[in-house]
Image (cartoon, rainbow, N blue to C red):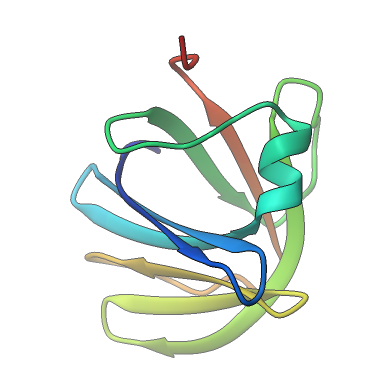
Length: 113
């Protein structure tokens, strides 16, 4: 799914950034360690375009900036929370169905200049 970063919050006490991304009728909130963002050379800002994929199979990871594996934490109508080793992803939107095992793949579509 193609999304735009709507908001970036930093949790300084945990060195984690919360990326709130919107598009295609969905909102996704993802916690990412700042160290990982630094390693991929990305300082996310509102307006950055990204592609986010959630799959049950890992597949190829060559073209992705961030790849994590996780599992569902909580699901309710239109909202699913996944945990990736304590980092959270919450996806809100119509027809969300939880995956038993999930691989998150994220890449920037527009490089920061």
